[in-house]
Image (cartoon, rainbow, N blue to C red):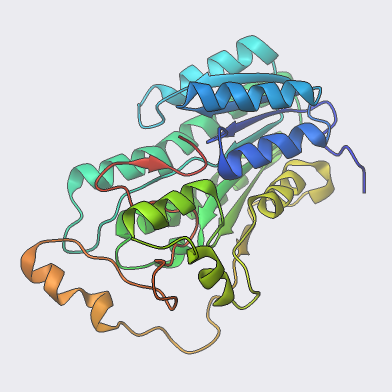
Length: 310
């Protein structure tokens, strides 16, 4: 295994100012990427990550963008193309999540979630693929999905729908771009330990300072996902070490789809009180306090947030 499997590559990472996106950008630079573009909303955090990447020897670029905007993808890739002139890898790590179930999901909520989690990854892939084909380079695109894409918690309906759509998008595009030597894969993540998740648990779910210890103790392997280990998988998929692997859906979670006892809805799942009152609710996990998230999901009091971004 090469110590620099991304040597000479230019990689674009959305949601790159914190969490998983920042961890992926740092590791890409450490593994030899010549250029790394990070996309996000927070210029201060973006500048800090860029400084780290430059100190590691990479040419780094921060692109400020609101990923829910229809023109965002094209604007991002124009900036990247002007700066680097080529793209070898794209990581669609940013995501939006708003709490909503069958009783309280609204059309605007669904539109916002699908815009960030499906439309923008598709349009970024389209714009990146045009550059990749123009430059005649073998390339790789990694979409960050979630195990919620298989169904998800009842209070994550818009998010689950969007991640299921990202699954179909990945496989369709992987097939379409294969002859252009552009590989496309999906990494479905489970519950991850990130700064954003800590804020979520403390601010929106009333969890105490020991929530992570208690949540970790309840997991089969005794901890949550570390963003760095997820980043290692992403960089493997970006590199030629993953060979001709394309159209793959990789579950990175402490569960096995289809194994174990079949899921049955509890009274809390059905939300009878919430349905009657029109007020949204949330379900507690097996740990008394933290709410179980599939992926880096944020309860935002009605706001849209991005994972791995700020």
